[in-house]
Image (tube, rainbow over all chains, first blue to last red; front, side, top):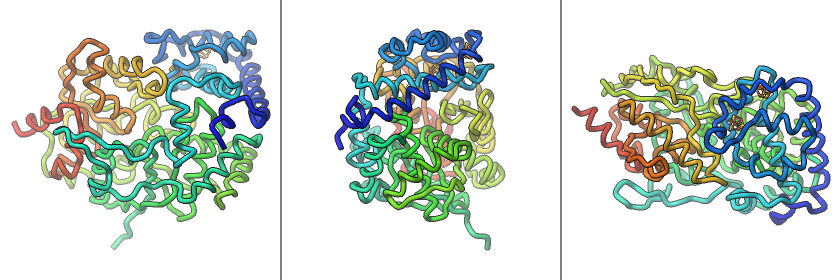
Length: 175
Length: 294
Ligand code: SF4
Ligand code: SF4
């Protein structure tokens, strides 16, 4: 499997997209009943001051059916997933989960994924973890790795082919 | 003789591939406190770093890891706050969504795995505070950290969302403070206590991530707090490893000693700084040690 299968609009993604769409539609329906635009989510939002994310507006836009606009915007990628909005919303709307849904949708639609997500995903596919053993720098500018520190071997998937098969199914199946 | 309680350690990605100080200090102090740590083969990423890309993948990976621990009938000790959230959320989904549970288990069959949702999941903070207990911790203190004003950073993923059950309170967590008192330090709170470390943005907006880190550290520095403890490899990577860079984003020269909680506990236990991986902290931890000696 290549990264394309998991992240592009290729044939296997159709079902995943459908599922995501169902999820977002459900969120859309539910929030139109519950969110009363009090703005509490935005007042505590970690990404608000720094990056102008306004979770209550994300909810309002979704409520109005501007799904495509949201999926294609950069703002959905500024969320720090601090979950304060989910914790504090008096109506249990959870803007953070809407944002995750929107980002997933962007990926499933073949939009370019920002930053290092692709690299991390590739690493998970090839060895199970987001990165392999790194050299750490000490205060005296020496470099060390885990075995030199007497730490036990790294736990990672033993049979990578089998591990792959499982993940492959997520890309292919409806999950 | 009572049997030692055993936990499978779920290391995740970041701690075992670069945040060695956390792992070293955990492996020093936890067995001393009567808990046996068991290493298992075959774990993968918890899935949380992929949540923005594909939430099903996150869920699948979390369930896969829990299933591995289940094979050995062990409860799971998860030192990373992000991993802890992912695994807890998986457990929550499995409890409330039997259909999803069935589907994920169907996929896990490819690796001959299955998860029935029976594992207990603990993090460093509740393992120390609830399961080991303050009294036991206190009994091991050889060098109480008198006069050290320390502030606690819990990390967003550890405290929220309370709806799925988190090890500490979401708005006023106090367990680290209680542990700090037990080792003789002076827990010091600050208005920025619940502020995010910035790490989740490291992936796509590194500059903003560091600004977030810098802002919090600057506030702590200005309040004359002697140091900070954290309990998540992502938070620590920001506050300790990247402190100098974070300072540049807020035009401040930052010098806040940042330690993993188990490192500070280890110092109070009289363990050697080397064994606790203190050599790997890049923030000015020597400032704390000097204070301690003074
Ligand atoms: S806090 Fe909840 S109800 Fe209030 S605006 Fe935000 S999402 Fe809507
Ligand atoms: S989870 Fe995202 S949207 Fe919600 S408060 Fe935090 S940064 Fe803002």
